[in-house]
Image 1 (spheres, rainbow, N blue to C red):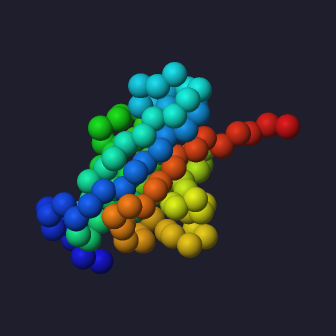
Image 2 (tube, rainbow, N blue to C red; image 1 turned 120 degrees about the vertical axis):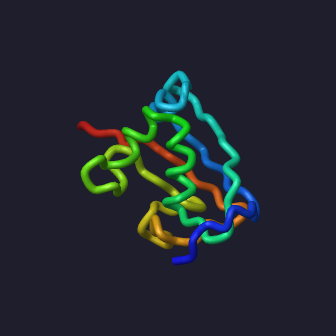
Amino acid sequence: MPEPSGTVTGQVEIEVVAWVTKFVGGDGSSRKVYHQPIEEGDTVRTVLRRLSKGHPQLHKALWDAATGDLGEHIEVLVNDAVLGVSHTLDSSAQPGDHYALIGQYLGG
């Protein structure tokens, strides 16, 4: 996997929705949108880690501290598809991609 080059090649839009916005300074009922620059060699994982490093509560909620993989309670969508359908964390980030972080709702 190529290492990020430090040269910005475009950006992705990251939409944080509903209760997940509480982890990025929101009220938990709306959405927040970020435009994250991407570099050559970036993956979905590196882009999400870059965003979450600036928001410690999001970082803690999004990533499993023991494994470094995604935690259980926030669903990641890439271009409207749940992660694992047509993209993985190690898929290349492409200019114009749209990511969404959506909290799972549990209960009955």
